[in-house]
Image (cartoon, rainbow, N blue to C red; front, side, top):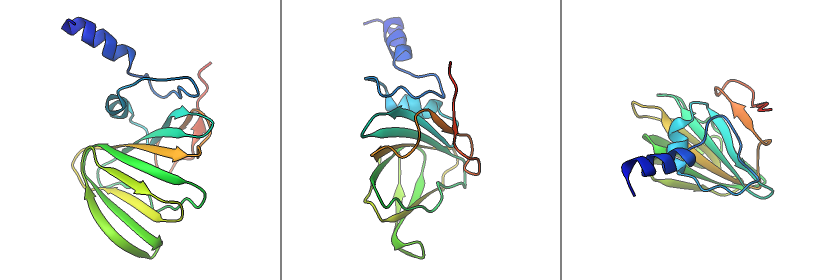
Length: 153
């Protein structure tokens, strides 16, 4: 396959943001998709039982301390350096871990967690929720902003 064929194939598998491709089948380079996302949070794919979101955390920013009581979560560091905090309560973090590109954080329901960008570039994260946590085609431009639904008609 030539370089131009590879480029065309890659371009076809790289989304334009923001857009939620669910619940249709999707084959995608997740790392490239995460690199393209400049929003704090964008849903990439929302199905009936699973959701994939992409996050871009600014330097010195964080996802914010949170807990999900009704679902497990997987977070994957696509690019950057994060400090992961985990704990039974918001005030008792039992663990702090460094997470680099390609690291995965598995968070059971009921565990408080936070990821702080301690690197010098935006921290790119993909996050998997089961079941879905956000409405289809949700975009949250900054951590402080409320999630909004994109109208792509």
